[in-house]
Image (cartoon, rainbow, N blue to C red; front, side, top):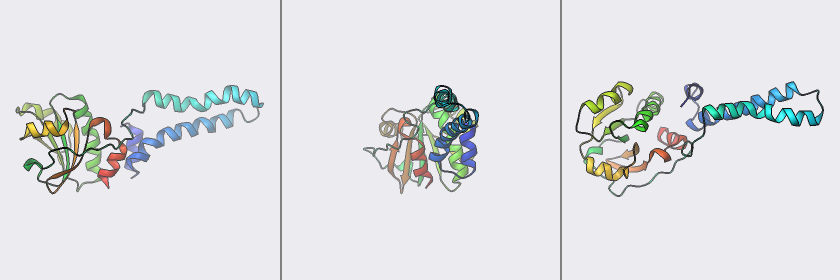
Length: 194
C-alpha cells in the first residue's frame, strides 16, 4: 500500500478503487499532457512522440508500484477443520509465524482495515511459544488489534496449509473463508470490510 492509495482510502473509497485509481490517473495525465503538447503537430509527429509521452506516467508509476498477481484477487478456500475453540469470537483472524516478512507487511493493511471498520474484531495469532516473538508485531499493530500466541498450533498450521500469513473470516466460532497471502487482494479486503 502506498501513500497515494492511503489518501484514496482516507477519502472513503473502496480498496479496489483506491488500488486502481492511481494507475488510471497516471494514464489520463499522460494522455492529457500529450494532447496539450502535440495539439498543433501533424498526425505522424503526434503518433511518434505522443504515444510514449502518454504512456510515460503510467509506466513510471507501474515501475515503482507494480501490480502483483494477488493484488486484485479474492480466491478463498474452505479449510478442512473449520471449528476451533481458539476461534470462538466472530471477526477476522490472521495466522502468522515469527520473523515472517509478509506477516509483518500485512499489519499495515490490518491497521488501515481497523481504522476504517472500528467494530471489526481483528486477532493476529502467531504460531510460537515465545513471548518475545510477539513484541515486534505488537509494536507495529494498532492497540485495538489483538496480537496473541496461538494455542492450537497444530490445527492452525493445518488450516494455513503451511503458507503465511493466512487470513480467516470467522463467524460463530467457525471459519467461513480462508485466504492465503497470494489470494488476499483488494477484492477480499472489500469483502471483509463490507
